[in-house]
Image 1 (tube, rainbow, N blue to C red):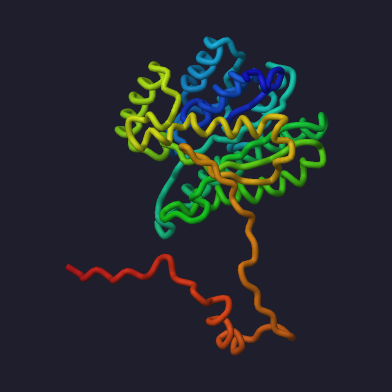
Image 2: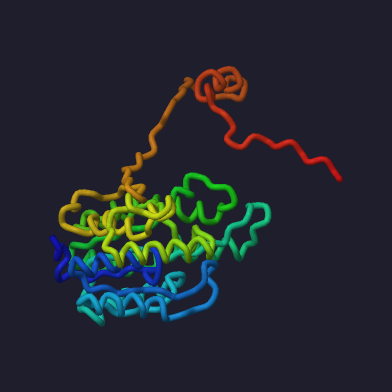
Length: 315
């Protein structure tokens, strides 16, 4: 059943390629008019290029949909406001915001520069805020709206990605709080942790080969990921879009403040953090008491996930 979002207006940031492109295309197929936002920079955020956003707009229009391009950076408040303004100016309103834009600047934390930290936090975490703030003003006034944010499993801890992990897990905390801020006005805010083969996660050679295989599958009309030509193809970015679009429909009106793992043939609802174990002591804890009690209570069974490596002998 197409047309689930007929008459709605959507923004997708970082929609020129990969996951964002798939989200924009499916939103349009379901009847939404789409603002395709993409600065067109490289994987590390360098440079600008309008052609990725323009190409997706052309695809949507060729399929009979409505779309306009926007090339602003989400990393500034002015950019976030202009992205939202583009939707209002072009289509007269806004109903859906999908925050997807992102970059990578991976490095071990002891080698990471301040600029590498700031740039990733700005694009991911601040980039979610810059659009959400201005979309939230619209949603509060009209008492409706949908926001889907993009987190990552890397937020649970991933070597060499301290900046990315901090931003992505910050997005989950932001999602839970914005769900409370906006829920009273009829809007929902949820997050996804996508598993997908994109230019951020694959080498250029792997991405080129994957793109060729997926193009051939689409030309044949093979929609099932089980028909993939390789295991990497099972992580087709387009397979993330159905959950995102579902969260934007009326059917998901009661889903708010949650995060989901999605990729290939799997969708999982992630658990909310809970206290695993608790110890109490009248008058509070002393260091001596903790040395006695901690190992057999809170610390029982805990192991170091990154045990020290044996130093390499000097050559």
